[in-house]
Image 1 (cartoon, rainbow, N blue to C red):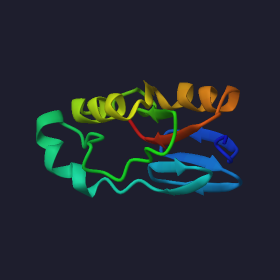
Image 2 (cartoon, helix red, strand yellow):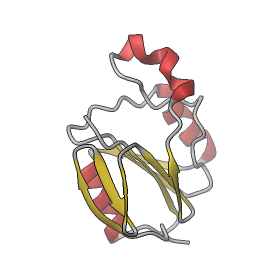
Image 3 (cartoon, helix red, strand yellow):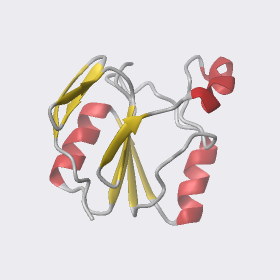
Length: 120
């Protein structure tokens, strides 16, 4: 099982996947693209100065590797509870700036899902 999508381009504020441009964070789960629903994580915003990726979100755990693109400058915080849940599930968690995440996904997407932050 690969990523199942082609990421055409990324620039601050948008990502183009399979010919469609998204102006919001996306989740790629077994070849399906959906908007990242960060509402459950907003309650942690004050602690981080930014809405982090929290375990309260619908994270696509059905994989061996989860790549999190942390934004153009790598500023998306990933909460420790997400790291702990990845460890518990035996899912390799890779957190890198979104440009690097896209490069990783292009070179090896076997058994991989992704969350891509498109701004900071």
